[in-house]
Amino acid sequence: MTLAGTGTLDGAPLLGVTHTAPAFVVPPQSCDCHVHVFGPADQFPFAAGRLYTPGPALVQDLEVHQALLRMDRVVIVQPSPYGFDNSCTITAARSMGNRARAVAVVRPGIGEAELEALDKAGVRGLRVNLESRGETDLSVARAAMEQAAQIASRFGWHVQTYANLTVLAGLADVIGRLQATLVVDHFGRASARDVEAGDPRLQKLLELVSNGKVYVKLSAPHRSAAKADGSDMESVARAFIDANPDRMLWGSDWPHPGGKPGAFRGAGIEPFRPVDDGETLNRLARWAGAALDKILVDNPARLYGF
Image (cartoon, rainbow, N blue to C red; front, side, top):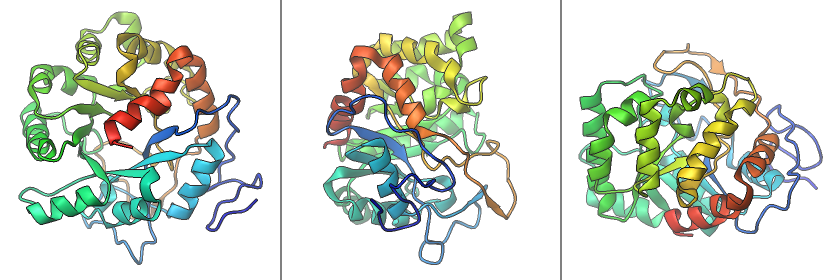
């Protein structure tokens, strides 16, 4: 079977990667909570101040990716190369109908009418991307989170942040008082070493998860792992799941833009990382055990309003 676009379901690679088929029965209404869409570039131009330039990863390719992983629902997250222009993300979410939701990035002073339009288009969260910019100033991070939470609370949205453990621990008190729920991307950049050492920064994040204030995306394990495939992240995943399985989410991070946080990576098109998302999903199933349905179905349905 072949779908329109550059990807197929006939065993051919999708954007150069062959994804392993799920080795378990994926629950109906499962949700991939973290993907991006890029392009077409002539229709959706990138921001002038971007740190990298990705190649195309079209909504047609996303449709194929979701079918390969047997996901019924998806959350499209605004990527940093588009800045405050959410057009590509919103267009993709609208084209996928009620099975898609979106997370946007908005400029300071955005008008009420534009926010209402985003809500109608399926936006359910605002992203504060600190790690990609290499932002570690706690005062800057605090202001960005509080501003996003103030807007999000008016629509019942959440705030999503990509930040490391030092920033998250440093803002633990602030996070506990935010007007909106916080969703932390990519394990909060925690590693197996942090678990083994009983790192107090990780313990603060686990406390926030335990009390229900924070969701964590068990996504992109390769970003924090010592092993290239992320297979050594089991202890981190289990620590978060044990803290509160009702606050766990999973996302593939497709199509896997890479590079060094906070650094301009050149004007040329940067290739995506060749991550096998099927194997990553199979690994999650082994790590999650009885909590798998909560992670893939129940928790996303509650948070994103499916």
